[in-house]
Image (cartoon, rainbow, N blue to C red; front, top):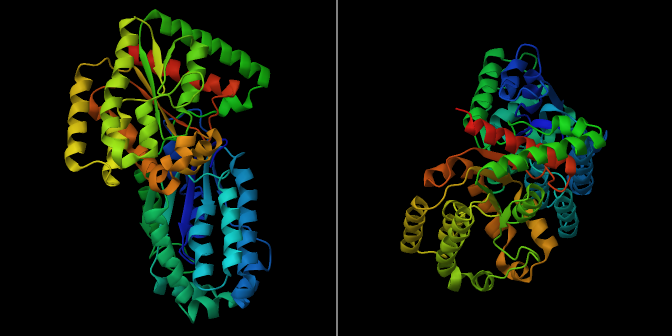
Length: 489
């Protein structure tokens, strides 16, 4: 979820788990400081908490409970429409945004439950799934999920106490629906979520329907804040686009040009390597081409720098036959990447790379090992040789890590239409989703390889568009600040 928000937290959980209670309490004067403390590292952040609740058409939920088979499709489409309207609000809301039940939860939990329980026909579910796939191209996941996990018997007690007539028969007298949802929630967070998940034991979230347990609520909010601080992989607590979006467009362009000039002059004073990392399809080459052109420094590219086509024969063969060429390609890429870097440094000029050498051992070797494309022996050899080679190689001074959803990676791979990639080279579930999890941890593990010890900038490509002149200004600003801070004694 993007736009002006500094941090988007998806609050998830079964019916009656306490989502509304938690969201309401998080914004009260008594507790709001707990989550707002997360923004202390970013003085430019807007210190506000906004809650975006579920809002569906009146009568839809009641119709579903009266006759699930007749109304399930109608209800789920209505929920989708409500999520789309809500996303427009997310994109315009600065500060911390709490989202009650993000859209991904709708499909993977509630939508799938309708098909499992025969509330939707196969055709209805196919149309519903197509709708979800299209909508999630423009609605990314939250930055972090909070999962309020609650036993079904506890949920039934709460639902009975709140006394909504339409819920009693379907949820209290028969546990089938709640149990199905519970199992799908477990699968959702185990298999389909790539961003960080904070699991909360919500058994005591509502000790009484008319009285919130203040002590327990405080404990839960403190746990959430502490977990987000601990999980450095939540990248959104860094300076954001704020002022660049509020600038007059002309002023933004002028300021962007000024920062580009300053950064260009800085890079000409000494030779340095800037390197870019990120999942397949997130735009590393586009970033490197735009930055190398604007800053007038050399670009080192994995593919053909002009056509963006695969001109490496071994990479081409690998994408068409991974089991046969995987090991040979990884050995080849180790020498190729470091060779380009050494040549640039020897020339005494700054350069920018569209692929960080450490991505191979930290992400791709791990993926190929999981997939059985590398044996344990081959994996160990590549890890050892990578570390050996890095000891004698020039280090990078600044690393840019691009993060984004695997769905965005897949969409862009389809858009760029490289034949080798579309003929089975990369697949969303098999490759991009597990790679996204590996890249989530990449900023923390990369320094362990010893090749990069300088500053690291994380940019969310769902929010930062490098083809926008104003967004380029934001990127230049962050790069210049990081490099100057590094050189300050």
